[in-house]
Image 1 (tube, helix red, strand yellow):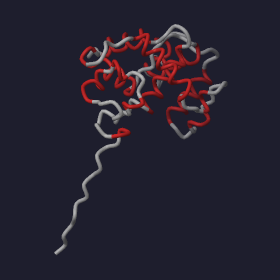
Image 2: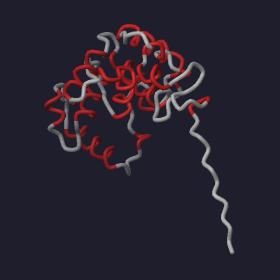
Image 3: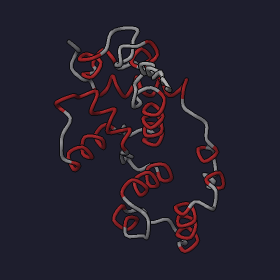
Image 4: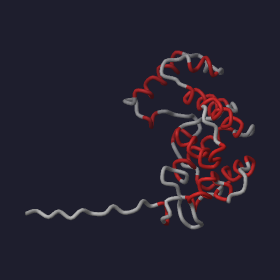
Length: 188
């Protein structure tokens, strides 16, 4: 049985993990360039067009989501990363992390999930926390998780229910999927 989830411990552990493992992307550098996204990308073109029409970035969530092709995720990520607002950037990977950590205590409604995720964001450097959470979902708590690399396994409901120390939740070292069995064809 795992220990109860501890938000402070998770936040501190995530930020410690990020100091060693945060991925480097050009748009995470000073200046926030979108060039690496490629202008052929429809969303990148739309964001560039929006940026060229505004003298000043809207600082309210409801004003940003009113813009064409900007939903809650892009709006919260923009306000958090560009302006340091304490907002959660919640995608499928972040939901998976919290669902695994909390198990049956993870809320089912999207509004309650957003409320929980927002409460998890620290007041100090919310952008770093959100980037760390996104990278953690991409590198450790992914679809086939690497539970043996997770700092939060001691209070993770998913690990407690399915994992063993030194193994992933799949029960195989390193989170590897079971090898496919090859079919032997017998041509007659």
